Length: 162
Image 1 (cartoon, rainbow, N blue to C red):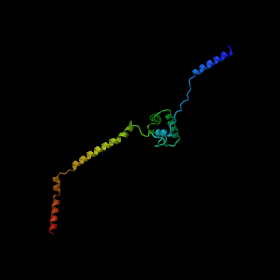
Image 2: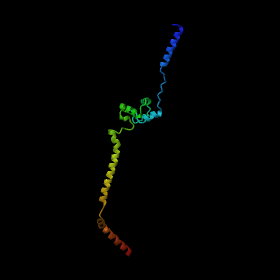
Image 3: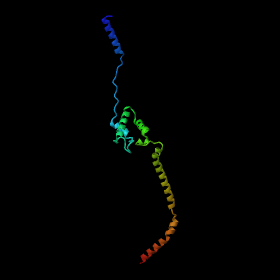
Image 4: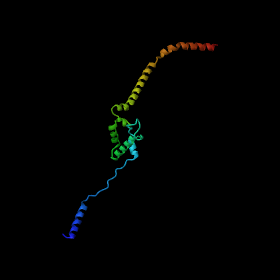
């Protein structure tokens, strides 16, 4: 083999390798969720450590870490509901700002309506019962006030005569 044929073999092999190589694309960077997106999810959760403080305004180190966890999960494409479910699985329903409408918590949602309609029904029933009991036959009223009417008429006559 001469020197020129080795160059040609090398060029052909290099050309084949170049043709067979797959293109390499830069990986799309995952979008970093904004603070508003993180706080929108965190506002629906209470701090599991602090009492009655929403996660979006709590300043403890734990809450800062949980907000970063929310940011990571949002970056992975998880929805707000999935993230809330993640926290409920670990800390229970008490981390939710709005309790779920199931189980005992369902009573909380329906009890005001039941009390409203029950109270309205009781009020209507009571008013109907009072209206019936307050109706006094007219003859009884006339008989009761007849002595007073007579006395008043007598006094008016005496006054006019004097």
